[in-house]
Image (cartoon, rainbow over all chains, first blue to last red; front, side, top):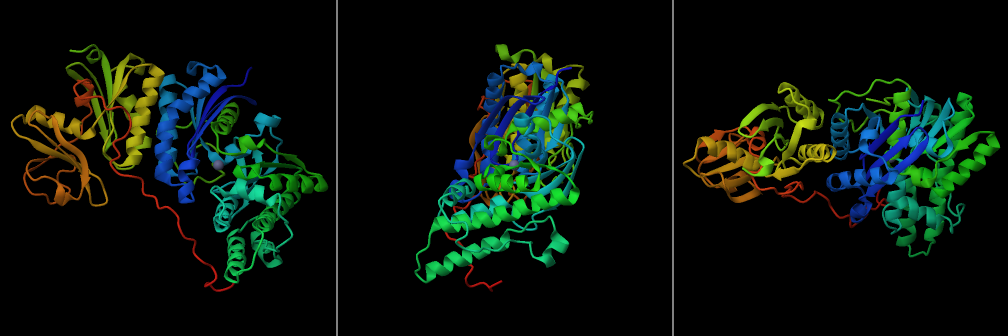
Length: 347
Length: 217
Ligand SMILES: [Zn+2]
């Protein structure tokens, strides 16, 4: 039996994505981004993003079908991000998916965006090992998950108690006078900076914190420490290297993320580690993880950077996995959930 | 009667409540509304399926879709528009966008052909969307978004006619997309871009809050 052909729609933040996937095969992955429209605001403006989704949705759908050489009538199921994300942005995708499902008479799967980030690597490296630990890091989320089955069983081991890693990148970039979004620019500056120049704090790694927050993250204190360091130098008229600050900040983030990911593998007795989310495209995070995973005898799965950011193909993967696992399709009256918990894979 | 005025047309409007109607020329077959607020994405497609089933038709029978493009609260508005666009794309039929206030005007003018009037709807934030009409239902001015005190006095009509204490006579008239489905080319096709009338709320970030005055942690 050939795997089902699934169309996936993503509109939870500032990317309008439509992907076509058959099992582990990526047929099309079209993404229209409104990131440039948000740059001068220093963050995603929900109404701006939502307007852009409406404009981009059908053209993106059309391009994806063209790309894959697929007629919509051949699609076996429609998958769509039902949350978490921005409500006004999510509804554009969900309304589109419902109309497609009814007009094509195909099942609808409203799926969890975060699971999409974890699942997308099947398109690069085949079926996921299970159980596995997943490190999920993006602009809005930083979590450690135990994945027993990508379609039916995911449990959160820990998550950020304040800012997401990506958010900290954006704030530090702004502080350093670097453009939005902060992730890629800090990653680039850090590559020519000294990661040991400044000892920034590693959140929730002290023994007293580990008791309660073993697999949780905190990046708010780090962000404030960077701000205080930079502002003090500026106030005193001291020169400093932006690249060193970027590298030292990034090292603090990546050190904590990787140390806790490896610790989670060890605590759960699991030798497979997955990474996903926009920050998983980060050069330093990828290399440090590889180094530490190898040392700990853990197999690491890293999707190519282009699949780490938000896209429709990752949503299609989850829909396909749900279908194959026999998960009931979503009903036609589903809504969206801005805070959809990661344990809810299909709504 | 123009060519596109034949066959079955689906009318959708989500500028206020969630509404859908199915009609053939001269005859509305089914019209439904869900009045609860903020259920647009949940209820629109079930409602569309319901009006199709109620009249024994399937989507493949449609000759076209006509959709209200506002003004109205943006999130709900986009649900109706993207639904109409997507259905039209898959079914390969035309989609027409019309001003939602005009739909109310069409309904009202059909039964009150002797007086000019103003159609209003709730724009939230203590403002109203409005447009003025000739007795025939032809739009004269608008759509606009203003404070209630800036709405022209006289005969006020619409789903939110009784929302504020406005001077003059007020008649509550529900928005019924049957009025557009039954005569899809009666109103001008304005395209499917929403009539937003307002710019997105967004502030350009200029300054960064200092942390030095804060207590050291
Ligand atoms: Zn994401």
